Image 1 (cartoon, one colour):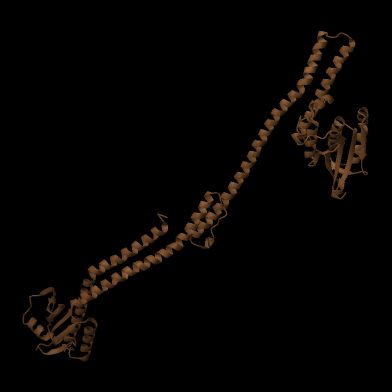
Image 2: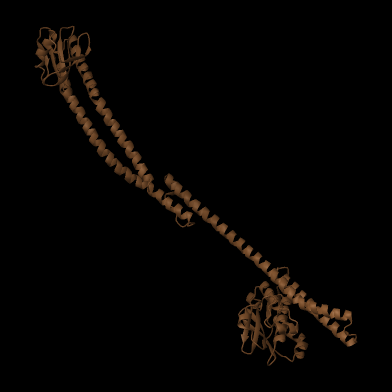
Length: 493
């Protein structure tokens, strides 16, 4: 990534560390020598106090005084020479104190070299910087009120060398520290940015509505990134639920829209079919009524014929309207299904017996195949209506041997009631449409017996209202319509 947080994080910390080390080096380079000189000056003043106190108490000849000055000289690289009022040496340090005797005598006599810079002067001392061929020194000399004279000096070259070494060492340490710190910070930043990159990948998947990826951290016991990951997991779950609910609602809305469109289409189709079905009988009624009104035939026999046609067509229209009302109630759930226990075998026998006149008029042989009483749970009135539609349909289409077989077949906890009639099979492309409203396989034949194409639609609506199966099967010598009912034995009665 061009603007990676890891890179920015590492650069910021490396820059801060390098800047801090450079600032330390710069301060060290500028002020370290001055600091060393001030410390050396303070040490020389401490040695001066030691000499002055020893002179005031006449202790400069003691071993304790010598031991204390030896420690100072050894520890801080200071050369000391102390002389009494008679110019007799009372103390000279082991690191060149004897060489300072003549120099001290010269200072006391007023002989001062040119390469001297006075730094500070008191009542009985003078602090100066003295440049010689051997190097540059920080010196203090003077004569106390007790007559004791002294001189102390320390080389400044060693201070400069120490400061230079310290500065060089700090520079090396700074470079190495910056490199090592940069590597460490780069590795540490990887540990910080890795979970952030993981959260980024999870968020990218969420953009594409993939909510399977989850952040695995220490949860509420972890750091801020773990808390962020936990909240992203909760957000992912919430979004998934919300989208699921939206999709469900959208699916239901789509179904409602499709259902509404289907209803509108059904309404249009219904109006077209009703208009088509009513057009012929209305035209006949209108024509024959006009004929009667105009006195086309004045003889009683013709008038009676005209009246019979008008009554017959009116009866067909009335029957169709009744069936349409029944179908409308069934399809829109306005007709209550009353589930009751009854003997379906007795219902079949009673209906076939009542339809005997119709079958005899059409010279049709009717046979019932049954095996004793069969009790079922169903709406008895609607079951009889289904049977009546099947039976009347069989009578109107019965041909050949003119035989109708009504069968009752037990199937586990079901009974299948079938109505078979000999005749022509239903064309394959029409089998799936026989349950549609106003659909007619043979329109001329349907018109002949006054069919409306609604009966099988009523059968479909009734069987669906009772949640039972129904269907039609073509046989070699005819057609079988069937429906199933739930037997009482399934419920242990």
